[in-house]
Image (cartoon, rainbow, N blue to C red):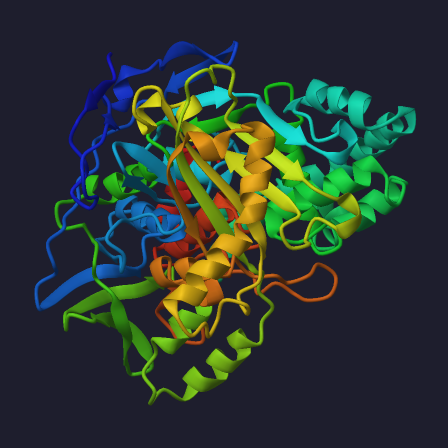
Amino acid sequence: CAVTRTTSRPPWRGGARQSVSGPLASCLPRRVHRFRTARRAIQVNRHLQVASAIGTRQTPTARETCDVVVIGSGIAGLSAAALLATYGENVVVLESHSVIGGACHSFRRGDGFHFESGPSLYSGLNASGPQGNPLGLVLRAVGANLDVATYDVWNVYLPETNFEKFPAKVGPKGFDDLFEVCGDEETKREWARLVEETKPLTRAATAIPPLAIRLDPGVLRSVVMRYLRPILSSLPVLGRLTKPYADVMDRARLRPGGFLRNYMDLLSFLLSGLDSRGTITAEVAFMLEEWVSDTAVLEFPLGGSQALADALAGAVTRHGDENKVYVNEHVTEIIIEDGRAVGVRTKKGKEIRARHGVVSNATTVQTARLLPDSMAAKQAWVEELQAAPINPSFMHLHVGFDATGLEDLDMHHLVVNDWSKGVMAEQNVVLISIASVVDPALAPKGKHCLHAYYPATEPYEIWDGLDSREAYDALKKERSQALWAAVEKVIPDIRRRAEISMVGSPKTHEMYLRRYKGSYGAAYKAGVETFPFGGASPVPGLVCAGDFTFPGIGLPAAAASGAIAANTLVDLDRHTELLDRIGL
């Protein structure tokens, strides 16, 4: 039951690199392989991808008809499309970019350096059961599992460690070891109180799997009747799930300015782009369940984030030859007839009609702008969405470098420069990922590829309206210096080793990923503003998906939103049959 590697690439991606294909699910059990790097074993789970992804670079005919058309191929859009195809719907996905995946795509530069455009920290890709990570559950539901490397360390460089590397492991012992170095005895007692305070909230946060949710009255059967017992047992704390996680920290008596409060601010920020005062309790409670369990691991899909997008796209096309994933097809208008969304028009003049509905993975503001100007609801919806709070953007540094003598490198590194500034301060937190450590195929032999970024702290405003390319390049050089400085904490001579380097700005996000103002996602503050949960729109037949429609800015939230959109467009019987099949 071998897993094969081919040198071909799915047709929706350019160039040539290694991709993974595998046998059918009947070949279980999975195989486990190990390879040695950085003085420790990294486990590679061959999770048995059901089929190679099959797509097309062809353009649609002048007019096509399908059941559902999906605008955008981010993880939300691909999750929706893959589930709809699994439900038996005829699906067409239209991606504006030349490569699928949205923020979750890879690109190649130089002599075989592969770089990640977005996500770098994964877990729960092999999830099962109601408490599982929504992305893992979507992969399971559509039969598009991945080859995944697992490991348990991310290195932190903190004021408490004098910015020396400390290997912070996931799992309960990892937190204990961190507190030995960065905290004191009271920190350990705070942690014990916080874990106990969070336990009932975790049970409540995982009582209802997002894959069971739909945006119609059928939710009474798919959620309320199906999960009545865990819902009833969670009633005493349900109201606290949408409150700030800082409230939980207060109840656990965490000291203001203490290490644990700072660290939980950091983890909250990595989940939502907001510190614990703005992050809803449900997000953190869910994360802690995944990261502090005895079986906690971190994961990385072999082939990079592009492999994840390709696996979902492969699930779309595998469920029917009529299902298509098109790239270089920019949607310019959502077609409305009799007040209902019935299809889209593209920049190339193509028209794709949809019998059952339209799913938009564009940001909600951009989706509203696609409505015809003649539609009465358009302007009010656009104004409402433009007034919504959004997170700042990213700065990215991609470096391909000579790895001679760096055999002890780890994949993940995190730098916090100054706790007193707060984790949301500009250039204060830097994440660094060296994906080729766990997947050597992502870089030429003897080299590594590195991705460093400010997560949700780079202001869009300073980039908007620059009057020349020279001014833009100068600002990129200036604003990337803190990224280089953070990387130098990991690899002091990185500038000498660098063979290729690139800087991405909020304008890069806006142009290539079509992110509204290059934003990292919605920034509704817990306890202050109400997140507009779900992808409902004022237009019948139009459902939105993405990080502006589900709390959280990471892949689990994106996958959950895509699942909700797909569920809403199919009948209740097919929905509940799928829940039964995957054990939910």
